[in-house]
Length: 306
Image (tube, rainbow, N blue to C red):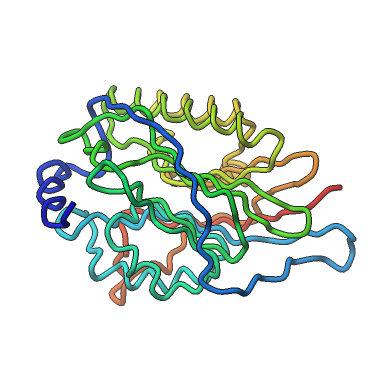
């Protein structure tokens, strides 16, 4: 579909935001392979005091507000090129709303392993979910939400193929971690909340089928507000069902945000958050934010236990 036609559709449907309201269907998984942009593979981190590998991976989850210029509540034409080189400080970058300016976002990113954007989608925009990684990954799979709320209203989630991605990352010898990147339904009315409930149930079902007894990093724009009682129930129930812990809540005393990084350890691999912060370097020369979301940085310690 030509960009001008898509842009007209988006102008009609996205003036209120980038979330969603009128239920729609169509879930499905599409598998691709990671696209290495370099043949180099980083050596796994190890400690001198243990024969089992251990290390720290710097994780960034960032909604980059990459809707088309004039629709995005940010200024993507100016901001996305500034975001690109800043990604290099992080070993695992999971972005959301990478809809329209992926070439610009990837231009200065030096990560040797990057996901190819979704193509062949049935909606005006793709899922906006991409990965930049220093560690190799495989089995990249994209899944569209089977339920959403809002086509030309309520944040217009139905205009994008929003959902989640799955990939298996190799952090070190014998250490593979299943990484999920998600973007849930936006909006604050009951239809949006019901859609989010269905989406997190869909994600939990997928995890139960494909990540049994595997360590997990699940990150992204959850659109779940702790101050909204129904959202909090959805979040707590989801984490309990699949055994996840929110990194900020594990550390404690940190601000709540809808942009989350959640972890699960296993008997073989331990994952623990060492540090959590808003990555405050994502600003322009005047100190203005480069997106309408704050980037979340979590230093995740990983350790092979046996």
